[in-house]
Length: 248
Image (cartoon, rainbow, N blue to C red):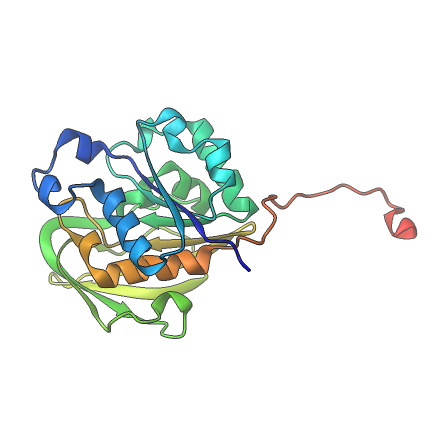
C-alpha cells in the first residue's frame, strides 16, 4: 500500500506578519500558506501537510524536512533576497534528486526558480485588479483534469509576456487579461529527476487561493510532481577509465 503524500507549503509570510495589505486579515486569516494547505487537505485528504515560513529556523527547510517532503510549494514576493543561499542550494539538490516543486505567482523571481531555470524569469506586470481567464491549452495533461474552461479569476494582478523562461516541457495553461495581455500561466519543467510546475495566479491582494478551482489545479500539480518512490539522489557524472566495458 502506497504511503500518504508528504507536502510542504512554504510561504515567506512577510505580508502576513506586516498586516499588509489590510485585506490579508480577512482574505487569509491563516496566511496564504494556510489557505493553500487547507485546499490541498480537502482534495488529498490522506496527505501529510506541513507549512513553513521564512522566519522559521533555516526557513523551515532543514535537510530532515526536505528529505521527508515529496512536493514543496513555494510562494515568495518581497523577501526573495532574504532566503539563505545555503537553503536554496539544499532545496535545489532535493529537486534534482526527485522532489517535486510547485512555484507560485511571484515565486517566479525566487532564487530557487531562477537557479533551476537559468534565466532572469522576468515578465510584464500591472496590478489593477483585472479579471483573469485561465485557458486550458493541453486538456490531456494530468494537471488540467477537472479544471473549468476557462477558469475565471475575478480580480488578479496582470502577468504578461514576454516571460523570460526556457521553453517549458509542457504548456498547460495560458491566461488572458482585461487589458488584452496573455501569459503562459501554467508550465512544467523537468530538472534532474525532479518535476517542476509553475502556476501564476495567486497575488497577496486578492483571495485567489480561496477558489476551489485553484485548489484543484494545485492538487493536480502536487499529484503530478510527486515521485515518492524515486530514490532521492541527484544524477551524477562518472569518469570511468578506458577499460570499463571489459569488466562489465
